[in-house]
Length: 326
Ligand code: PBG
Ligand code: ZN
Image 1 (cartoon, rainbow, N blue to C red):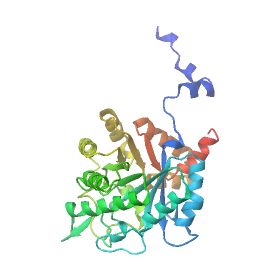
Image 2 (cartoon, rainbow, N blue to C red):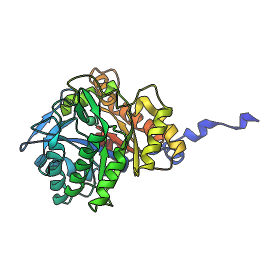
Image 3 (cartoon, rainbow, N blue to C red):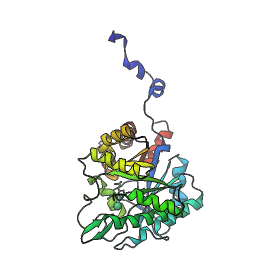
Image 4 (cartoon, helix red, strand yellow):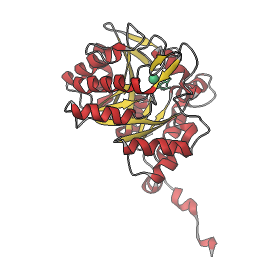
């Protein structure tokens, strides 16, 4: 009887294909990472991240944010490039820090997208680690207080979502407690729950100036070999009050996204990281493939694996492509 079944009938025309498509890709699922620095009128292109720039607050507010909003991109994930660093990363939690000022300016501009902020210390510390260093070690519990202060300062500036990425144990609980104590009960936490110690962060570290000065991040970020442990990380973050959990990187960890989707009912974000983006773009520049089409396929794969939200440097370009009906 199987000869009556013809699956090609489901592919017979664009209209039929679009009607039965299982997974959709919309800009309302995208968060666009932005790198904000000091200065005015600045758009500094990044060598390792073609198409991505470090921008000053005025450019962010007057150009980048309106463009993202107009394209229907869900929101921005704000990263700060401070002009000074110190041992304890104090510009991460200063009221006058670059992220705090950028968020206040975005708020004041009437930008209607989601304002999310990265909460970590590595761009702000002189040693480039994500936490406080004592005797050459990244110490957990002392770091929690600084991460909580950072998150509160972002909420105070007007962030909708704070996204802790330091991979310290109990960072979500510490941040939730501090936010609630200060009255920011409506601020969401999107936790970088399963963040792997990946070599795919290289271009980002160049962009953000956040490479560790000694050692690596493998005592706090996860071993790429561990999928079961990723489930434990997510479990803990959900218990501590994370509103959205994240898997990062995305493409090399689709199995982890799928497993988290199967086991939890919380929204899942996936970070299509700088190295994934750079590889695809580089091959495009060499003329080896159509990079924008490959990006579309990559984002579709991340959605198909089960991610609700995708953080991607291609957000604006892909949104434009989708608007054109691809
Ligand atoms: C910092 C941070 C990193 C990324 C996001 N937040 C780098 C790191 O952990 O070294 C990576 C993003 C990317 O590669 O696109 N905690
Ligand atoms: Zn960090």
